Figure 1 (cartoon, rainbow, N blue to C red):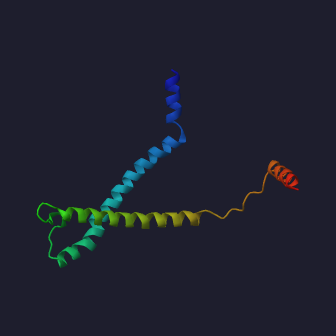
Figure 2 (spheres, rainbow, N blue to C red; figure 1 turned 60 degrees about the vertical axis):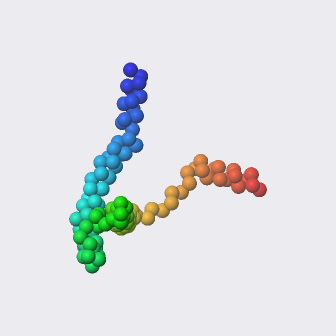
Figure 3 (spheres, rainbow, N blue to C red; figure 1 turned 135 degrees about the vertical axis):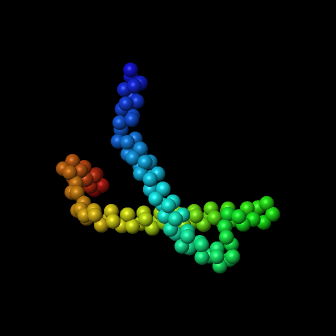
Length: 124
């Protein structure tokens, strides 16, 4: 019975619930970013470059048995996803900073003031 109570306490802690929500939102956000990259950005950027190089499909580029086209496609996709995430998170952080008012720093409590006076007296 004690084990179940400990497990219940562990599961209902705020950190675990926050983490579960973050995982669910993160996976949804990941699918949004993947769709943006594969359906919007890659066709806009990569298709004209492939047409200029007279290449129909980047994945089929190979030299002997080395499929370097797959590698180039993976690196390109990683770079684009990283850039999109960076821009998205930077704009989100900017919005969060604008919402937070500049609060004055709290004055020390009576106990803190007393301890500072004791510290200063000891220094003298």
